[in-house]
Length: 301
Length: 301
Image (cartoon, rainbow over all chains, first blue to last red):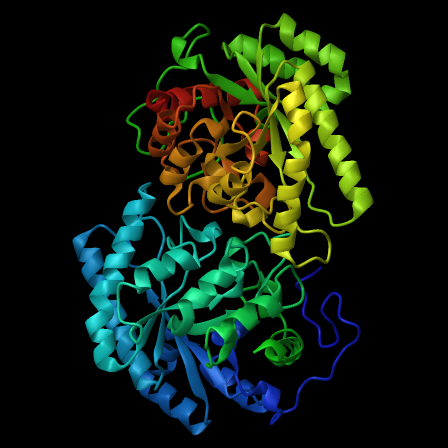
């Protein structure tokens, strides 16, 4: 198994290469390109790449939006006729220090404003890791839960849902202290369903005992479904360890059916952090992910 | 933070270097050297290294025991007056293929025999990962549970306890499909407490939501307590990503107190898979781990 992206490769166990779906193919209707999958593309290139491939939705990151300016980004995406499936990302609110907490809150309010301006109803929240030198994981988790609660009124005002993203435990120390879908739901369920939800990312939750039951429990609280693969051997940089669907160990059929049965009808983002994927031409990556998506994910929606 | 081992370094946040504890220091009474921490030492060297450092217990691996022969190993360890805190490892029984399952079962019986011969009452079970090309994680978990059950009569006959080791989810695909202490206990609780237990390894469980409660639930089923550290950035080879206690993010005080309050009175193994640790002279590694143990772990037992 490899994370190398080519335009001819096929997932392990699949009988033959299928053609890249053409623009207009109804199977692409719910596919969204998360910008980080083609990290070397500017927002302009990503928007054009989606249009060229017949992908009608994009998951945007705040940094490339800021690069062109929010107004320009809004117009660029709107002129192209794309939906914005999610804004990545808010969160990073585990600090115990009051000034840092206030700054994180203000930054999350700004992220909500940006989501609203982009016509997007979902802000992805990555909780953040343990503050430097802090070993109190339970404390950091409590502060993350409190910070979500503090954002609820502003999110409700703007009609933007907060999506708590549980992160694979590989990131518990340095990126996301919320480690399971069960734990994310424990936080979300303290708040109204139409304001606080969860992000189901296959990379983060595929290993979780009872994950299918937790997806059912999530129900309408699923605000985003993101797909990418767990590959072995794990790439050296754990942050860039995600693979292309079909190159690894995740059972996309089971997880996707569970998400569909929970009532999720939104877009499906492909979000792959991987140095090999980033090194490949963006248009090749988009073609490959579209094929893999229609082979491995879309049939189960 | 770094995983580099020196004889003078001190854990982050500790005020000053403490002297290496001398042989006979009562604080070393329950410390055990897991052989993989000094992977370049032969069994002979590890036994001598324990004696020189005043460490009265050793966690042995089957491969270095087989290198010298079981009888020689038994005599060597007994002549040195060491306890064997655990035998690593049985398990790797997730295959769906009957011949492979039978072979895994036979190998685990052999491991039980070796543990009994070594006078050790604990066999560590690492369940194994997903078989090649298999994406049915729930199925593999079920087969692991069945394989544990199949070993119960032989373990009881030999007076050796089976210790199911939940593995950090980073290893769910390729090494250990049992991912949480809660899940390991779900399996263990189907069997008598004096035959099937669990291994609590700080590296594997530190991130688990509710882990303190799960340790309390485990109670007398804790058959081994192993300590090592979660460090960031994670070393490139995930298998060798463990650090020396104090170099990372784990709250050893809380976990150790929970293990003690659960009633665990056995040895505490230091088990560190790390290329930097392995590259350091074994006697330096032993001195460092003894210091870190008496600073960070032993006071909470």
